[in-house]
Length: 466
Length: 103
View 1 (cartoon, chains in turn brown, green):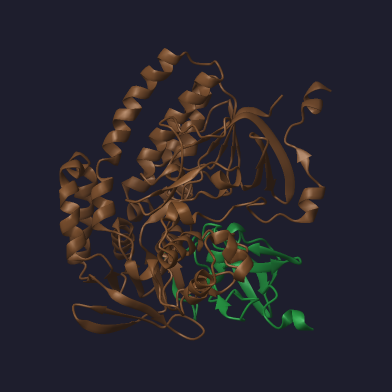
View 2: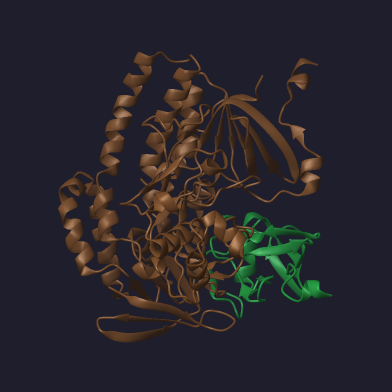
């Protein structure tokens, strides 16, 4: 007996569309999501925010309501504010909701935990006033709060999106300090053919750049030696661009150089991962249905490799079809037939990715930071510390924990894992796949003893029978 | 925008009730039901905490429950401010920092 046929973890585009497709196939679905409203980070609080500031956030955001509306189905239960901290025995999920610990079981689990900002360690990045660009966008979406006189630092389309939204909000950023170079752009051109199939993305990019130009937002490109100044809080950004050293005074510095899969939950159940060279991050291994080496666990969306919101929604549906077939609700022929148009859509959605990933690569200065830069924000371990550990014979990230507590703070390596792998790989001359990643152990989110002691089964089978 | 805050509320909602919240010794009136980290930022609260390792100041970084830099202490439990909402009478403290535990 389970609480549902399928537990979906995460109510972003992948989770929402998977839940509905699975319900339409006749499965009972339980969605566990940390946020108080559906949408994930990309469509954060979309139902409320669209009404309040849809014009500002744009149609790509408000369109997320189509997905939240699809959660209205008698076979879908959405538990809001449910923080999952452990998955055991393949399909037994422990979570806390409103201070109450609970366990829910199902026949299958779909991990739809999305993406995280790629860690961007640089001098001063731990100072108050420095946030991810994604954080600034969340403030704008969910709370209608804009950062005053901000400087956006890094590379990628998200920087242009948030800058154009800030401009529309009447709170334009002071400048964009961009790390991509002309050489990156030249390299990206060989992917242009593929990207043209994803032309709506290119058109959106050009529109945003035009908007920034018209708004007279200053863009510095090819920036290097970026540092954030400040003692108790951020006060300025310094960098080199166009052969000159520059300094822009600002209390709000927003960092972004791409997003990476949030693999925390997949790793906690020992799903194998491999290094993706183009996206420069680890991705979990799954087949084109989202099936992993752990039989009951599927992955869909950005958590399986970055593709964006629309691709995530399609991948969620594809995984739902496979799960429905697994559970005898769908014949193989109907599964394959239903998946076909979804796969065609996915192919189109992914067409522009190689171009974008090559045109806006990660900032090299943050992949190989100077020795004094903090890498592990929680335990304040520097790049130099990691390199010294490597010199002492430390081969992998798990050893850095023992050598100097890197990755052992409350974030459990979410914002240092990739950096530690990269620095050790560079120092030891080994590939990231050989260096490996932190082993992630539950609880993957903090849980109090009281929450464990007071745990109940979600809806126990005994209660149902009584 | 309050003095000392670098964050501007674009569309303050007139029908949102303000409730009393305390951050350390600071008495605040915050919008009920608003994301706690967001509300504290607009109120000009910074830093949210000092680190246990060096005592360095920290504030919200990711706003999505991943980085744990916006940690605050409420009712003796250290929690992520970005994962909480404003409620009437919240008593917020900074979690233990370097030096606090030495006695």
